[in-house]
Length: 264
Ligand SMILES: [Zn+2]
Ligand SMILES: [Zn+2]
Image (cartoon, rainbow, N blue to C red; front, side):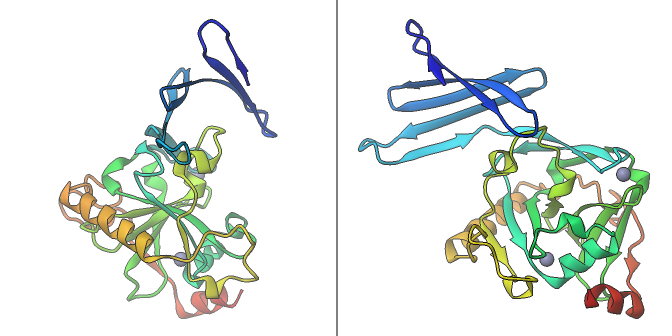
């Protein structure tokens, strides 16, 4: 980090183990802290305000469009206007999410204690533009209210939706989001909570997200309501516009498939 003595602007050089390196510009004036970087097709802007007593900073990254693609690149799309406040990130340790990863042969996408990193956002901000012929969906049991979508080409999980097209949430699984080298926490914010920790396959690490608080519940409820009111449940890439039927016929696990997937 260094400061130009005439302009007062700072340059911040960022580099990490993945070989990503970037130069950010930074300024601090009148209690406003700004960081920005302009690159072709990828602008990032951060603004923070220092409280009068100098003890707190209220800050946010501006929204950006995040490319989506499956492992092999056949299924592609974009998540529009993504920022930590535009969705709801959490980690789910439930047995269903673990069974889904096992069904796909992608237990490697779970964290060390079986958690799935999920970003809930409205379907209306998710566009899948190519490779949608490879979209499939799974229902873990005949009465399950959840459809679990994945790309058949390389068995990358896409996300979970309700069985009804009206529900304004899609739970995008982290493997589909391409942050283009940016840390996930920078793009989506930290996970706000964990759920179903009793199903974790080992002791949670000390840096695991906190259990859900009333505040977090309230935040999710108000997001959900806002998305519903603004009609962001559509257009959805997961359901037919006219018939409202899922775009792929759900595969329902047979009892023997269930037994295998839930025993692991
Ligand atoms: Zn789960
Ligand atoms: Zn693929």
